[in-house]
Image (cartoon, rainbow, N blue to C red):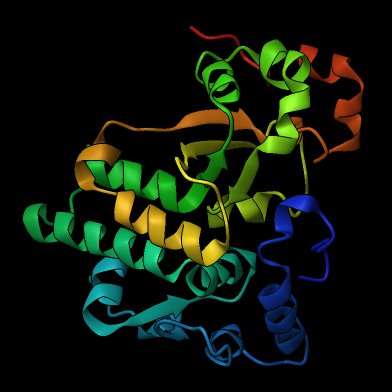
Length: 241
């Protein structure tokens, strides 16, 4: 956690609770206890050893209101997601539990559970003018990040997926988010949380309503993209098939 640069623009949402929890862990407090010390914790964090053998992780959370937690960055950011987006995380867990109850735990996840996992691990929320969204959907990277660059101050991008946040501790050009459109202005994280939780459904997620976007291409998020040759890398900014 000492490697986290809390001044990065994508960590603005997470900075305040993240610093508190990280400092508690640095003082030798177990991660689950540090998360439980936050007043906004919507459930109880417990050591990973509390998860019974053979029980699905999502099913355990749904039935007990407890989240098994391992030491390390992955579960650190997962815990922060529960603190900052409690309604969205609860809705995702309810949808996972419903799928498990209906079909059991299978070697291959179905389309809804696949989409739920992608959302939980790698989603980002974008509220933006229609022109930016259209360019993102068509993977017109030149238009999205260069021609329409003056529109980006009107956009709001908030990262959500805890694996995405973990990867960005060590920023690399290819890191890509699965962007979910927030069709509202992001007035606050609490407002966004409530809107996303209401908007999510198994039917919508089964259609994979995501648009991939290399997040370090966002204007103002990475110094190297001020040189527009940054976007010429076709292995990262891939054309639409």
